[in-house]
Image (cartoon, rainbow, N blue to C red; front, side, top):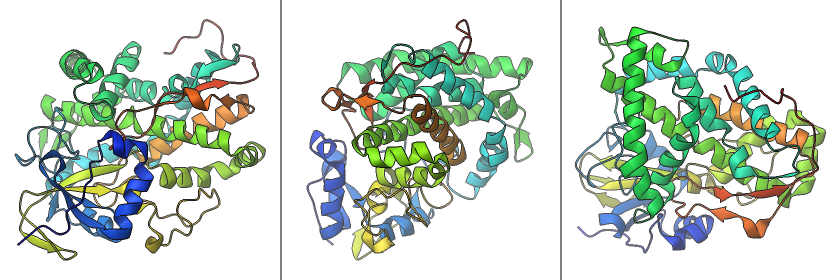
Length: 413
């Protein structure tokens, strides 16, 4: 049985990075389920219905590690050389045992206890530049990285290294110096550091997420160091990139649409609903992958066991058939907003509440303290690859200087 249909598509290519929205729009309009020969071949699901159905069927579309598609992280195409990530690379029913532990760390009540830390780091980052009248917003939005590293209990002064290394594995081309440094130098160094902290926390627990995890059990036995490591590495991977991506794109768009920016300045209560629309519109995690477990016909196409499948959250978020009126328009009043930015089904992002809290703090404080900011649009530097995480390396901005809010000698910690 032949593949149906075959399209020219590579979500990691420079061609795709130049216009991800247009590339997915063309697929939805013609072939919402399609096969591409890129990266050894994979299926692309681009309409809401197909993405929704596949994401909720873990028994046919598996997230678990397998030899299909090579070695490495199963939920991206091509796979990256990352350690096993728990629980995103585990399928039900075992998935639930680990997700329950992660949920205890990321539930709304737990995030509520982190709000003071989030607000502090946001003030601290802004204070570093507020008196100068200019900055790179791509540096200001390091807040999610430092919050994640501090919350986990890892050395705070290493936050930039964690951030750049994890971002490079998904946003840099695999033959670039940035990617090679991340994989060959930074990640091995950071992984040893993580392992050392996990070992130390078993002997000397502190008030942090790693200390919590080393005390937890699965199936009546303590979590192993390897299991704790796998959970921590996933939390870092998710924490250091996606919220920064969301905020960076939002700040650029608000500069280009100053009427909407003024509405949010005048009425900050609009921000909660606006963030849901920013999530839908920008989809900071563009797409994730699954592996087919058995021969199956899906939406009229014959998928074989071992086939790799890309589920595009970003494309589903712009599908008119899903009830998104004028989906290519950003409307901060859009409600309800059944976006897929955090995924769908049991593997839906556990960090959604934390991500929202950090985005609200960053966008809210920047609009309050830098309300007249301008952005040098010609100076924007996008990630080279836009297939998984979409965002900017540089966002040069200017604004009217303002006063600091923390003591001058206040440190990040």
